[in-house]
Image (cartoon, rainbow, N blue to C red; front, side):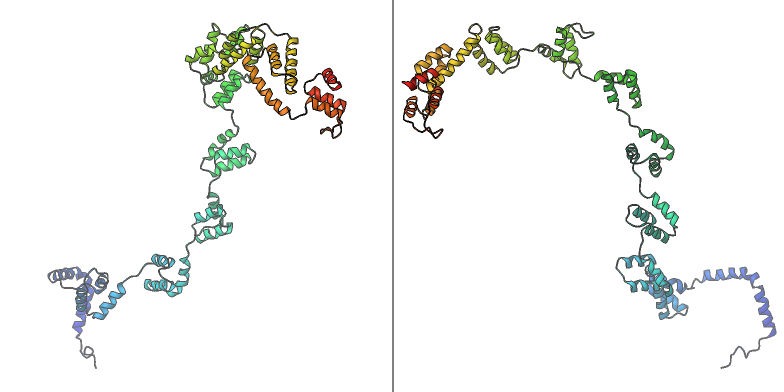
Length: 475
């Protein structure tokens, strides 16, 4: 079909007019635009572009029917409008795709489907997928190396992933973690575990400003406590000036140290003060012994209202052993001994019993040593004679009278000796021993016949004297 335009002969004047009008268009454009604006304002019928309305309809911002109406007026079919709406829908961005893939919500195919939706060229997919693994941060890696969880090279490799060179990674490693504290460092230096240079390094690696390092080094020497200085002065090891100097190192004034010194130590006891005064000594500044004891109470932890009690307890009394000897020697009475025992703190029930005993001891002058010895021998003889059946209870009681045994005690002793005699009767009687000797009876203790010496010794053991035993065996 022939082109109708090509068959039309365009007059020369028309071409000239078009050329002149096109050339003059820029000059008359503002005037023409004004006319166009007025026309459009009077007739606002131009539809919005489909490339603007289709995405808005896809996202629910405007209704689809309106978009189709506007599209039809621009010559677009429903299929074209639907295609533009579908193409306007966006999927998750790359960061969300990685998160979903890492958490297992999608697989690699789903991730790649998202890349397609984002318009990423397939040639980049393999490289992008290498970013799925999240590595430790450079700071975390440096700290992990510091705590020996990863090797030096592993930490450098992780830092390189972030564009950090190996030298910088080593600096990060040095910055990770903290050294021992200053006080711990001083302790290690004092014990010779580290040297001064290492201590300085500890300060540098910590949060302390290095300009204070030399001052911190001065703390290496330990100071004696102010309490030790006070006690050393109290014991005469250092003088007052030295005590003040030691206290100043801890921030104490001389007045503080003097007051501390006065509060230290303990005073003498009331008994020690009493002994000292009895021997002619005195406390400087005290008016009397009582004043000295009151001063000691004030300087101790004892409340002053107990001063009278302490003063009354300054003396000591003889021991019970000494009281016994004094009563026996008639140096003191039983009543005096009981009073002294009470003042020594002996229990009242015990004192009552002791006084009864001492009353018996204090009946006369001290016994002669020969009489005492004879009493002991008589007691032994009575005991042996009664057990051997040689002495009767009446004879034993006569001996008790000589010994001064109280009547109430005599029967008690006889009762016990009688019980003992019952046990002894299981042995041979003197008559049986004499008969056994004469008839050559076997002695169960030796396994052979009784001899004269054995029989004699047996009778002596029963209470016979040597002469009486010989006489008894010969009759």
